[in-house]
Length: 316
DNA sequence: ATCCAATCGATCGCAA
DNA sequence: TTGCGATCGATTGGAT
Image (cartoon, rainbow, N blue to C red; front, side):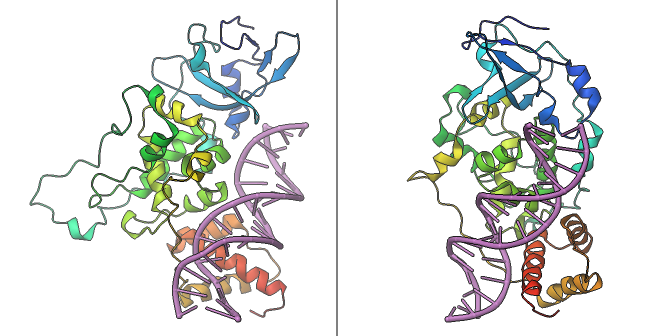
């Protein structure tokens, strides 16, 4: 199947397999489901394009955005008059295999905001705001990188009634798995941190009121998932890493070092002693942190640090 | 000055 | 072959 189009790039797109076939594969690597797409250039050569996301929207054709690695982003939005991908009904549910990688967190019981927990006196406050309106302009095309930063960093309207961070992570993971899960781009440009850091903070999201400076990561996730898909589409193509590095951009919040309590350190060392020859791998540590109710990143750090000490001959 | 929490980023092995 | 998660050394800098 090939489709002629009148896009600004004047290319022809050749999907090698159908979308249904791609879905049937149910691969846990959604970003590779389109890896057979290529563009045919005027000079007769072809170039493989890497898909970077899918944009499912109700009652609309599926949008797929391609990127030619490290060069230019091609967006189907730019060539609406001739959709490059045939109309495909998109099921909202990601393939089940994807959920295995990002298990849903159980709902946390009532809001942990202690100072605002006077129930019965007031009607229930609606959970935060419905969608990010301001400072986003009506037309997403008007969003500038500077505005995008502000949109993503927009504080909660009501800090005393914070969202459940587990719901934030769930929503964010649903979005990323349904949209190609380009982890590196999401982390670097949308959230402004390394992808390893994002993964670590998605393991055991702490209650909003207990978050320190890393609140920024969850806030950006929160704001991102609540944007209109048009605004997301627009912001996605921006180099926000560059924008954040600019002079005048809001400074990255400084880390607040919180030493692990000694008893927690001792528990980790015990885990390590129980399997002296074996590597305590990250999936195990993650599960352990979840079960114990500890925040994962410091757990991982301490374990990592102790392992290097042990290699240097430090006894445990 | 030292410890080590927080973060980054290069590299590896695996699965598709 | 490719991209991902996992691994782990390196770096930064907060806390004492």
